[in-house]
Image (cartoon, rainbow, N blue to C red):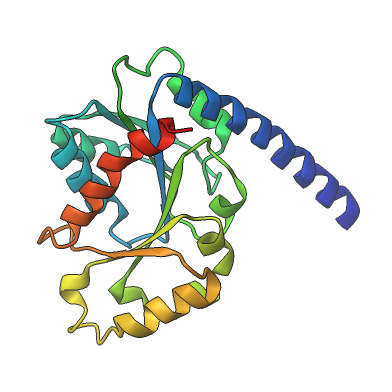
Length: 222
């Protein structure tokens, strides 16, 4: 039974990779920068995205796809930013895949879009295996989750480009050792870029906005 399971999984991932490559080519042809967000539940992913959309929306064309097992609560919340937002309800599926993204974009993706954000289902395991055609993948962890999260879930950190430590305004109350957490991240993914942010206070968002502003130029360069 195990070999059969492995074979099916390989086929699923192979098809996902094909679809993801098609999406990535489509995004780059139209000049859209695509950023995905992965994290465990409760990390502050939606709050981070809500502030990001609000800060970008006056200057850029922005949209977001949001994945959850049930409800459209996050999409309703994110629409307050003024950005276009669409919910993907996965039911029992613990991650988004490239086919879901392709289906959600049919007849919806607006013209003149600069940034598309994809908020994955809260999970640090399954999303690591599925390419969504994104240009940049962020993995978020909050100060309330502990410094050893990168050591417990190394695969998701190895498949991400940037680590974002959220809720840094609560670091002292949570007795969070940021230096230790950053060392753990670097031990898993040497050279990984790390941001510390507070979505409530706005700390770290100047650096994050600067990173996003540089993305279109970087992606269009040879």
